[in-house]
Image (cartoon, rainbow, N blue to C red; front, side, top):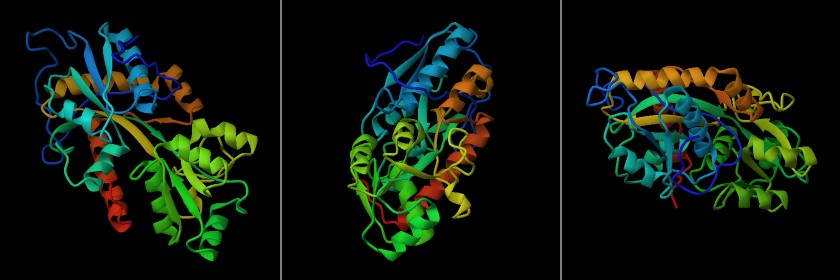
Amino acid sequence: MPVQRHPQQAAARAALAIACALSAGAFGTARAQPASTGSGQAYPAKPIRVIVPFAPGGPNDILARMVGQKLTESWGQQLVVESRPGGGTVIGTEIAARSAPDGYTLLMVSVSHSVNPALRARLPFDMLRDFAPVIHLVNSPNLLVVHPSLPVKTVRELVALAKARPGHIAFASGGTGAMTHLAGELLRLTAKLDVIHVPYKGASPATVDLLSGQVSFMFVSILPTLPHVQSGRMRAIAVSGLKRSPILPQVPTVAETLPGFEASSWFGMFAPAGIPSDIVRKLNSEIDRILRAQEISERLARDGTEPVGGPPERFGEHFRAAMAKWGKVIRQAAIKSD
């Protein structure tokens, strides 16, 4: 098992981490040299640190530990999961950006990292200059849920009701700039709605107020919300991915009503720019194998999460596209960071 530097233990399930770097100009480059340590030893010759710039117990933490356990089994070197939350991912990300590009420091990244450059006026790092993509771990679609008192069962009915009652329907989010907020803003912009955003300090208090009917709808993570949907305390009307979730195959996608709509969470891994390309390739190849192993893929599927994998270049393209997409939403919605 990977070493924990924080005493809290992770809960739940999700997915995985790490590998190859990308082209000059778009991201920091990987140096083309053999996958060995400075002393000529084969990589990895010592424990690998994975910085998680989020609170322990969340999906990033769980994914890092899942990958860490499997890489430890494969390579005989521990992955040390180091939780460095704070500053909306800025604190941990800055530590990673300043670390040696030797393959022994990696960074868990999520959609938040593609949002921050547009949301924050100044960052002490540049995501494209200071990091090299390693691997796209998983996609995790969100669920659009409403309070059962709201007389809607479909996205079309929600849009119609919001247009009939402009300025009267409120949606919750886990905070300004969170994916739960951006998904709601994308829905508002796509359907041209006049709805009210109510930000909370995290998804849990937002969920509590949705359950009590203080707000009308919200985009939420599927797994922790399923019990509320199954009990009838929430009504699921759509998923935010481009295809239906195998956990809730009867629930349509938002895109089936609003073509092109997609607002999924995703997770991956970066490394400091300058990491040797052979080390990136070694990481990428092994983690991709782990993601496709039956035990891991089935575990992720049970959690409503889709393993992605693939080369680091493709993850770099995905990251740049996410920056452009959410940057546009942030500008159009005039979102300012708290």
